[in-house]
Length: 146
Image 1 (cartoon, rainbow, N blue to C red):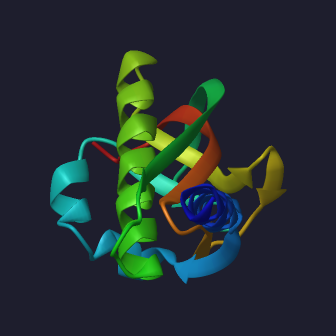
Image 2: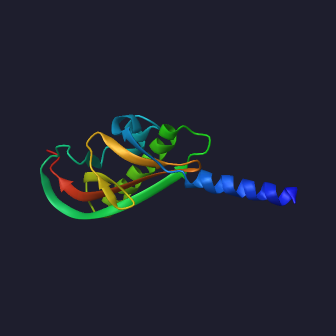
Image 3: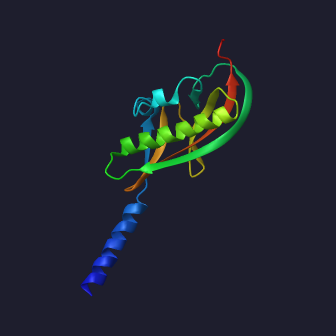
C-alpha cells in the first residue's frame, strides 16, 4: 500500500513539473552573444526582427515558421532559452539558404501561433524539463551594396 501511494505522489509531481510553462521575454542581444551564436550563424544570411530597419528588399522568397525546444533540466531559464533561440535561428538560416535568400526579415516570436513582435526581445516558454522558442519570418534577397 505504501508503495502504491508513493508511486501516485511521484507521478503527480512529475505531471505538475512538466505542466509548468513560464513565459519569458528575453533580450535578443544577450542570446546572440551566448553560445557563440554570432559565430555559428555566420555572415552570409542577415537577420532582422520585426521593427528593425532592413536594407532594400529586392525580392521576397516566402515565409516559414520554426519551433525549437531544448532540455532545461538543471539549467537557468535564460541559458536554456538562449540555446532554444540559437536552434531556432539556425533553422531559419538553413531555410533561407534553401530558398536562395540572403536575409531573414520580419522575425516575430510565434509561440503556439500567437505572434509577439519585438525588435529587442524574444519570447521563450520554460518549464521544469524543456524550454521552447518559436519564430515566424519572411525570407528575402536584400541589397547588400555589393
